[in-house]
Amino acid sequence: MNEDLKENIMGALELVIDPELGVDIVNLGLIYNTEMDDEGKLTVTMTLTAMGCPLAGTIVDQVKRALSDIPEVKDVDVNIVWNPPWNKDMMSRYAKIALGIR
Image 1 (cartoon, rainbow, N blue to C red):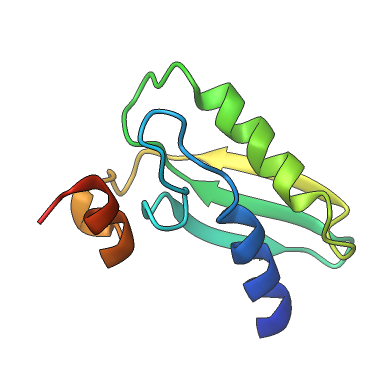
Image 2 (spheres, rainbow, N blue to C red):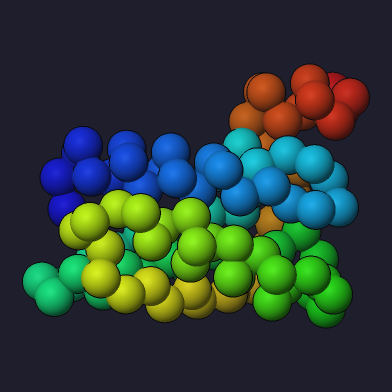
């Protein structure tokens, strides 16, 4: 995957807002990896802020919807993982400021 496409993908994922925290999933540090095969199937490896998140299905649907406008992406598989566990140190400076975390 070239850098322009990766930037487009990450930009689209920045449109997905965690409904509980009100900050996008990229700045929260929830996206661990993106890989695309030759057929255009994109695998997004990500985590959630907490196991058993009741909004996991909503977030996965929003990820798929956000990526649907990118012509190179033909299909999306969202892989939710728990290792490494998410923590507030994974958040960007922007997310920490938005949430009042030092």
